[in-house]
Image (tube, rainbow, N blue to C red; front, side, top):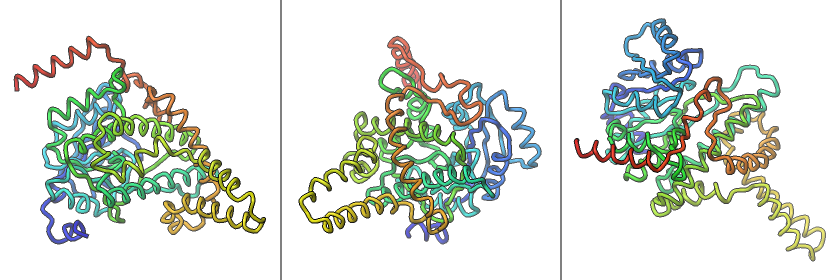
Length: 407
């Protein structure tokens, strides 16, 4: 409620304090076109579009057709979101930087709601709730995949809202649309860490950009906020075909890498975000739905095997009702909006069990960073995780020390 009043009565930050950075692979297309127009409608000071060199001309042609003067275009040699973000950061002229994916649609009042928490100097980042942009007249298969994608976002909204309320923690400030103070992003230490993150002491990691920034805010005592309101509901797209499984695999690998780092390397969340640690981070290690549900059923059977048949039936009925409720409660908002989807609830339960297999496979392939679901995204996949030798690490450290010394 505090931030609600700031949106309408005490706003110190306005849309002219915002630069929106859009890293894009293709540099044009219908999704990017719609994204740009929805963002322009909120009147930010500027949009910076960063694509790859091979698609620069396409991006320039698109922006020329849009007929607006507050869009600048830059490019990088290889398709890598971290490098695209770093290319844009020095060009930002405003106090607030918002990163947005190239397939999102913004509501018209998004910026006042995102800026309200940032009027408190202790806050460094603000995220938004997300909904799937549902396909028009999809065939049954597309509808089924879209349903699973919509539930993924619904669960994420629930987890983020609960964690921010309980202890101010967040599993991740999603890069689909997220606001940061520009001074945080421009800090030399941040830029160096962002471009030299290591995984397992062997690889330079150039994926999982939003996870890194979230952990950076935690380690530098910057508060985060999650605006869960209709006015901050960003619509996005997910795969509505079997490639959705590849998206789930990529997200699962990212969660494994980042949550292990948070839990056992940085370890700050144990004391600063105890509820979030229990409810979200530890589930990476402990949440195995099929195994646990089978064990619960077995333990229930062993506990009541000497009871009468009626009491056994009552015990199992209570257990299964509780299990169903636990799989349903996070999704109530979706079923209120789309009651017909309730008929697909069994599909989501079965997929939840299947997702455990995805999670296991992801655990054993953490050195893989491929998207697998977007054309051209994996052309330079090897660049996302580069094996680093000790001599290269020492050279980078000496260059960093010299940079700090000469500043």
